[in-house]
Amino acid sequence: MHRSHRVMGALVGSAVGDALGAPFEFGPAGAFSARFAAPARGARTEMCGGGPNDKAPGEFTDDTQMALLVGRALLERDGLDEADVFDRFVRWAEASPPDIGRQTAAVLRSGRPWSAAAGEHYAATGRAAGNGSLMRATTAAIWFSRFGAAASADAARRLSALTHGDPAAGEGCVLFAELLRVALDGGDVVAAVPSALELVLPEQRSRWAAVLAPDREPGQVDGSVWPTLGAAVWALRHGRDFAEVLRLAIDLGGDTDTVACVAGALAGAVFGMGGIPMRWASAVHGRVPGFGDQVWRLSELQELATLLDGKQWVPNDPGVISRIGPVEVLPGIWAANLDGARLSDDDFAVISLCKLGSPFAHPVHRIAHIADNEHNPGLDEVLADVLDDMEALLAEGHRLLVHCHGGASRTGLVLRGWLMRTQGMSAQEATEHVAARWPHLGLWNASFTEALERLDPRT
Image (cartoon, rainbow, N blue to C red; front, side, top):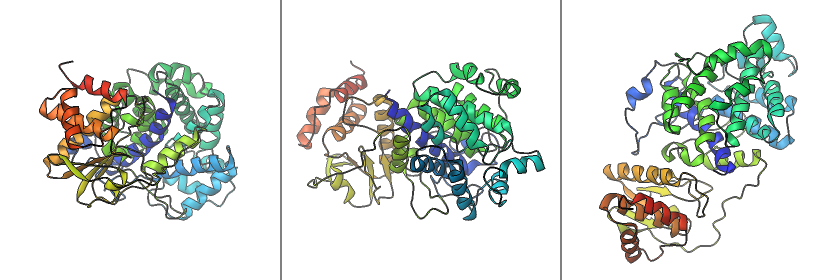
């Protein structure tokens, strides 16, 4: 898997976990599975909204808001400027975000300078081992992962210390940064736990080793740093895919948004952007209080992740293209190119298979992570995810509109895959059937042909 898929998966996965867990925050164990015993792939998904702060479906919380502040600061200052990060935090806190943690609020509203505020608070209270610095650690972990374990550990401690004076919080961030660094490089996160513990301060190491032990069974998670990271790593050990990791994390109950945020970052790096269910990634969004009206959505999160990894982001530029479609190609399923879909009636349930830039106005809109090249790790899983959502949406009576940029290659992949799944056609039969009804079908992508052959049980 290319590193770029892991980098985007880490940041998007973190935000997805945050938004998915928020409605169940402070609730009992098992609440998520009690409400969603099976995947909810129709118009109403597990991104249900609500919770203590009455979030909209897919809306992220302070966990992601603070991570975005750190990410923008790193890019704009070309590295870590603690005073600048702290100033951004203070500006955010002054905008009264409804879900700001008590520990973080006390420090940021103290009026003390960045170099003293957290330390003074810890000296006065003796309480500062909350998970508020861990929850925002993903963006910095991506940035510093390029510079090795020592640089990542140093930055993790310094950023944590801005609001959390207890060294235990900083060492939790060190562990998270190292595990994420390993995952972004394609390594085995679980196997890396012992070596990651070597980075921890000696006086903190034994407790963290116990928290991350393979045989440790977590209980309901409170707001402290040890059970939060311990639960996230436990979920990663036992989850077979991204969705199962988050289900396990949220079902622990308690501080579900932060546990799922941390678990989502690690799982997103392990399973990649394509491993995140499109019904979740398409819905995630939010604003950062105190920093204007910009809405952060999937595309903006992917862009930020790419820039933090030192790579160039190529913005969506559709150019001048003639509108194609929508045309009903299969019963209940229309096809189009980018403009055909964007300008279509808003009662379509749209499945987008390409980079969009800004989202459509359609109330039901899913965005899948498929590139029209040979670099699609987990293509079989992504295709299955798309087809599963299509089946659920059709069962609810929606008209489906499938499109990519040109309406040719990726659109053709999904249309043919649908026929193979629902009609039992071979790849060749499905290709001939679609070609007779959709003259824009493109067949140049060999990896798509191979994916369809794997989908055919006869081959």
